[in-house]
Length: 605
Image (cartoon, rainbow, N blue to C red):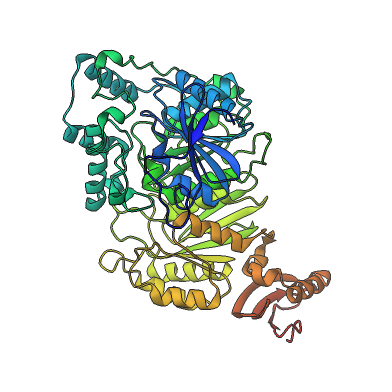
């Protein structure tokens, strides 16, 4: 690699105990400057990936969450600072960085202006990119965005310096989701961050509460109020000489051009983003052949900081599809591409209650389909796998359910050629619950047919106690089909977690990761139809059942229904008791059999 390099001597994330090297959460950190004058930082080791920040241009904004997640996944992460005024200038900076660091076929992740710059690079010189992730992006201007840009340029030209408190409150509303804004403690912390940014001219300050490593008091000051302002690199902010700031270039409509992109592409939209509205990102994904699209609920323009776990799930899943060291053909889309100028269809987001289930009960994924079945609805006639989403439902209609996020994560991760059926014990948008007895019957039937029962229990004893979920957990935790998800802050979960650990139930701390664990438990689906759907995969795949079923089908019998009476793990295998109802091939009356598989002796009954 060419350029001037060395270790970061500012103490920003240095002085990791016991390492003797600088880094974030144990990742190697080296810094340098390209021949073109771009300061960069390297984190971790492995296959390289470049993160491109938006307006303001500090690479440190990725270090709160994304750098640790990527280095933990075995990636060499490159971040850099820039002062680009538009996407063309920033694309040139990216190209020079890739050339000077000798990074070939390297995935690029761009946010906001950074995403526009990655678009520009893919259109003008796609050779350096082995894959691209466009976060909070657009392919055309919109009236709100243009008005905001004109307003900021007018303030800059007039030499207006808005009070830091005012800037902070505006940035708060522009960048965060309503869910974050409803959290008083989170709002207080974010106000501190935005106000410090306004005071220092540093777009991504790191107050002590967000520092990744080390004792903040022991580190030298960097971009803080007590640091030396002369030591700070210049930024295009309202604290500078307005005459020195170039006017902002208007975003052009490039949707028609995007069809020329052949680089594997993922577009990530944030459902509550007012600066880069999610539908505009969906347009970009629809314009690029083979592009994938994911949308995260309860996220604003800084969604990768608001909900990092969900963001990292879709990011790492996409990166896993890219072979190392060489470009690849575009993957099959998660959604059918839109061909401009077709009217924009409603998005299929990662988690929007208003659109995820309403616009497409059956959704195409990269290779198969996902069929959502709401409470009271009939299940499809066949499927390759079935997952039941079990857990408390908010009683307050204003509080969003967690299930749309889980459904969207399952959509994004499902890779089987067959259909994944997802049972939701909630009514479809605009619908209503059936009678209580009918609801219970539907839920019990759906759970017994499911291959995995995904529990998500975000227990809050005042707001969402989830007491019924305890009963269902007790009924299904040892079924061999349970996955338990619960956030770290959930209350009174120790007992459930104890039993999950004692019998090896997978446990995850975010909805997206719990969805991933559910599909890992499914593995490769197996097509089943009619009564076969009542045999969950752990039994369906077992040799005793396969042998019995082969004999019955050879005799012309037809499986009408089945019920697992009990299931337990035995070493590397399992024991189970299955009640089956069969229609004999000779036309005689239906027969009920009980099949017992235990002690590695095949069927005993």
